[in-house]
Length: 104
Image (cartoon, rainbow, N blue to C red; front, top):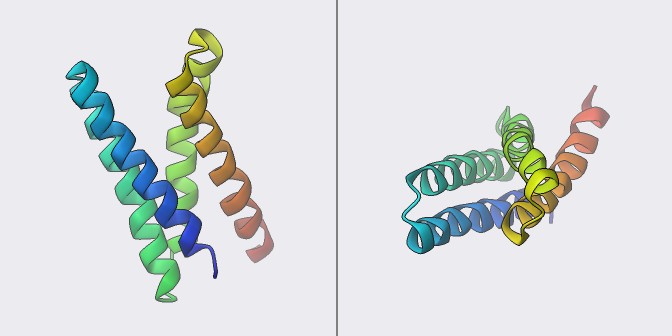
């Protein structure tokens, strides 16, 4: 099992999380961001699984975007959802960032 599995898991978690955010609060930005980041993770996982270029970079980009949006909110608000999103982003940054570093 390679890096595609964590990319698919993060894809599902962020997409479902964005949908739940929309259902609970009618927040269109939640569903849009969750879907967009989920698609980046999913596309990265698909490309990794099929040995295509840029899969790792897409998954890392999704982690950077998710972290950039959620980590400041988690620090400021200290609410469960931003904290969980920050943990997902940190896991992605470590996992995909380390793999990317090894390709250099």
